[in-house]
Length: 93
Image (cartoon, rainbow, N blue to C red; front, side):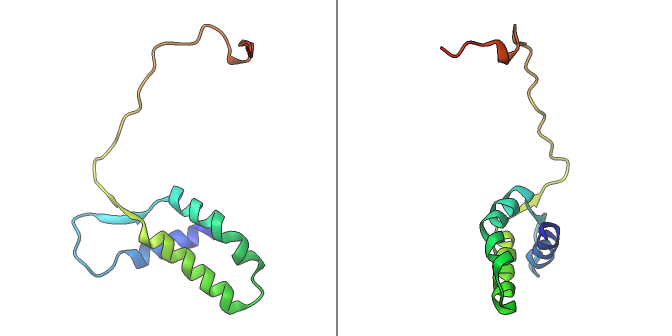
């Protein structure tokens, strides 16, 4: 369901405008929107309510697309300081 929503949002979010970058929906935002609307979608008995909630889900995901910039990579920091003991051995007080 989430993958279908992302594909549909990416397809609808492309639009007809000329843009510098390709735009794509983010998975983390889609999960956040999905967890809010999932219960309503699952318990909806009426097909029209189900369709309306699904369209709302895709619309929310489509509203928050981000540009995909080529050759953009952020390296993670490497921490040199290692702990002297395992965190389970720390005292509580």
